[in-house]
Amino acid sequence: METAEFLRILDREGGALAAAALAAGLDADVPTCPGWQVRDLLRHTGTIHRWAAGVVADAYPERRPFPDPPALDGTELISWYRDGHRGLVDTLATTPRNVECWTVHPAPASSPLAFWARRQAHETTVHRYDAEAARGGPASPIGRDFAVDGIDELLRGFHARPRSRLRTGVPRVLRVCALDADAVWTVRLSPEPPVTEPGATCEAITELAGPADRLYLALWNRVPVPRVTGDPELAELWRTKSGI
Image 1 (cartoon, rainbow, N blue to C red):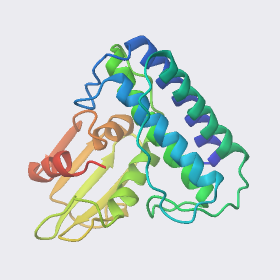
Image 2: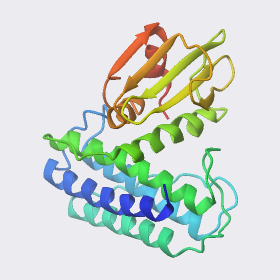
Image 3: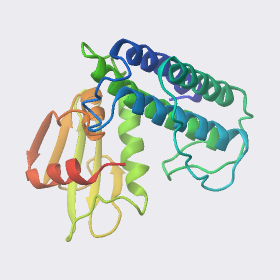
Image 4: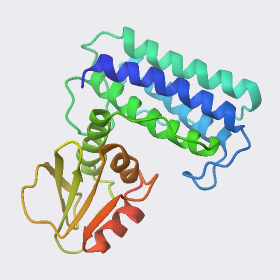
């Protein structure tokens, strides 16, 4: 997917998040984020938006400390969230394409700017789903190609980092399969960080599968995995140890 498309998705999803938060009310519980209310979701996502925009705008060369969210509430919090989201979209749209800055994980990207447009599009989409879960009613759709991209980013980005807790005492293999997109990943688990390869490169003892949009949400632990075959232990390992 192109950077411009990620920016369009980020713009749309950020607005949908604010609309769902307003409809739910700031006191509403967020069932997909136990212990959070909608105000916590807005504070968290708004802080991420400002933090990411700062990394890009300042061409920050190394990890920037993540700030504490503000103690805002009510209409002031909604306005603060919207301003931060707009600032992020505008920053990513106007920053030179050759900017050099720090990135979060090693997933393949054509440039740091492309990385951040992709990362924030997925970050905001997942949290938009959280806001809609708090609101109740049907959730907005997630495009198939975008969902496949997000699964790839999660597996080959976040879980390629040394801090991933998705590990097994002895080597084991997990397969992830988006059934409606002909997209497959092989995840090699061991005492070291997972190693993910596109394709069915070897036999697996467990497969997590489903339509791309549902599988995307499932791998972010927002909904159950649509279909688990083989040894359920690795599915449980994902559920309990894959949190970012």
